[in-house]
Length: 323
Ligand code: ADP
Ligand code: MG
Image (cartoon, rainbow, N blue to C red):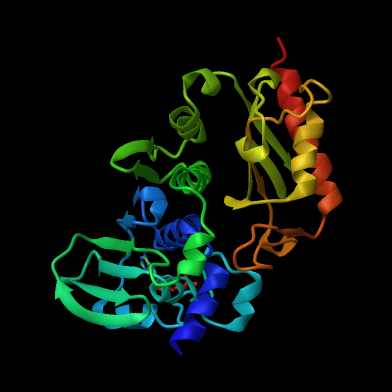
């Protein structure tokens, strides 16, 4: 039912930044090399995500907005080794349940594209449309008919900050993809898509920071730790400047965050945190990244070993470049 759909949507779509996260993940799963995001009024008035990925064929467009319809899992066995960011088939129907949604899409080799529209859970219609290759999803009037959910949101600037954080982290995780973010018409993120992490760091954090980031690189058997760690004086007031990736996925793990901080061995002032982008590469059966649909917590099979490897990798980077 309509109400059930709106309740279910609440688990996936909590705020504007959750919409942006889900749409970005779909664009990345579609192998886009360019993704542009634009938002108005903290994403409540409008969120638009446009990509140049594989698109959706007109006859599959309706299905993409149905619950549990995903093109990404062939069998249940895949769950353990799933390599796509999405696989539950929940995001698009959840967004369509709580906003006005227009999705225009065309696979690169298709002659024409299609456009489908929803208003707070009701399908308004679908038509053929000439559109550029790729997919564009426009989400307007988020929670427009759910005043209680609207009230739960913070100010437009606070919601904008969360969206800015999400786009930044995905840009750091995917240096090979061009990301742009426009906030109320002003461009705040623009990465080159060169494939080099240092280029993303330069565009996101500026040249002063980029020039003082120290390369981290360590391989131990089938595990690798790589990225950049900031010189101790580049520290920040909170952990949102430490980006942890596992197999290029943005995750959170308390213990690994602690390992990164420990590597600085007292060279960080009280309550200051490192500016760092660290990726752990490991076989997918060594980590469960899908324990919860929206949380970023992961479970490692060899947590202790990873703790020491990350700590060592960052420490070596700091020592190698100590003045
Ligand atoms: P999931 O990502 O878990 O499969 P979603 O509800 O996010 O579920 O998306 C449903 C389906 O719609 C996807 O499996 C995919 O086939 C298609 N899809 C969604 N977004 C895009 C996109 N940007 N480009 C191409 N296909 C997409
Ligand atoms: Mg998805």
